[in-house]
Length: 384
Image (cartoon, rainbow, N blue to C red; front, side):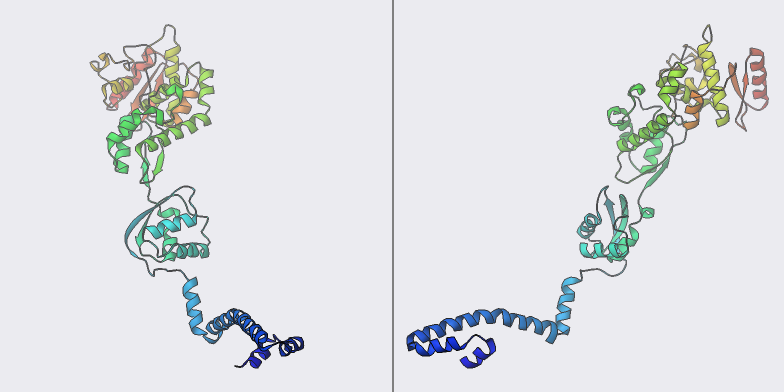
């Protein structure tokens, strides 16, 4: 291509320019021509780059498409994967945070593939904290399908009403696979459990019985703290402190009464009457000893509600055959019914109760010694 062709292509010359070049000397004209050629080369570079890019996208067609597709579509595995990986989603983590963790552990090929898959599924905001069992080298879509609440790895533990703390700790250890000594140590560290001040830094009576779900990484201390939190919720719901004040007792005393009611009752419907017997004995003038077999059994680390005469001779402060008033602390972990019974005892003059029918767990009540003896006779006839 000669100068004229370039001038025509670029439209860089006009009449005045041609006139000036013809009037100038050869040296000056040559200098201007060299300068203009350099300028034309600078303009040509981006033009040629545009032409090349257009060739890739347009003229190159198929190959240009492949190049762009490879750059925009993230790496992803296919299929369900293999092996096993436990991934924990922490509280407050976003889908992007989870995606990076899945890529780091080799579950998905790329974080971008996961965020695309969970976005397409409309579940970006539905991830729940917990531990999940996944596989190595899964497709991102397969990983999304497994990250649902129903698939969380949880230890489901039911703590029955009326269990002593020692039995509660044993149950927790068995169901979660953690050493019982860790639960025992955690139970002694009252400062970590958020116990109410009136509990006197003792967990007995305040590890609320219920069904709990614990994640694999939950520590024994965290489990017990959750149980205390559940107790605190119940205490607030029933206004334990306000109710205790009305009855002339401390909240701790109410929990002791509730624990005895829980240990002595065979049926929930009998609990308010049993609570009334306890109050009647405490308020009687002169005051009666409670004489509750359940407290003696607790003192001896035995079970049952029928203490023998030798057993009632123990000098433990929990021996209510020997000492007036309530024992030092709760003897079980009472549930809702027992706590509510302690706060709302049935009106009546009963001073004794006897579980006359071991099969039905029914309890009958007496106001006189003669009535009590009749109930004891019925108890013996029924094989008690």
